[in-house]
Length: 181
Image (cartoon, rainbow, N blue to C red; front, side, top):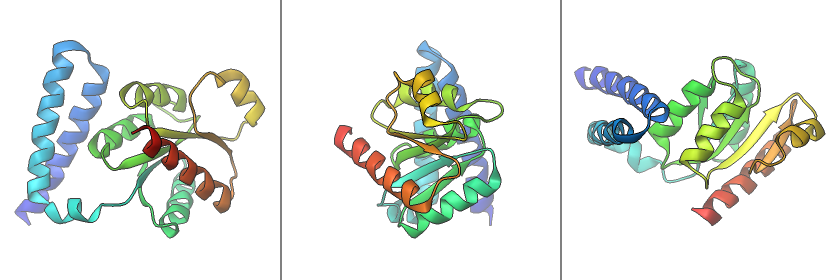
């Protein structure tokens, strides 16, 4: 019980450190990154069984609508992926930093509170240029390509999307990530 409480507190601290590290530069970022490594090591020591079981590809599904996250997660879990979720860009950056060695693909909603999809995309791309990123939106693909055509995205999914289109695009994005990483 004490270990579980400590592990939860460490995970919260890890997310906070990871987020602040993405917002800083220079010596401060280096120090935060080193602190993050130390916290992750302690978490790994306290929960080794979790780390040993995660040999597959993880997907981070980011959307501010809970129902969309739940449906996306169910679809991808049926395909055999480990799925992590986040409700906005700030949470997504923390989850990604905490699990960057596992996550091969991010499905990212364009319109979200606090930190929108484009801001989140830029920060993810800056820290991980090889990461497969799929943008989801209710806007039409032509409008998105016109506005964001220069971005290195692995695809667009227009809402509502089908299970087949989601699965296919994630598989392609993971292939992109594996090919570059």
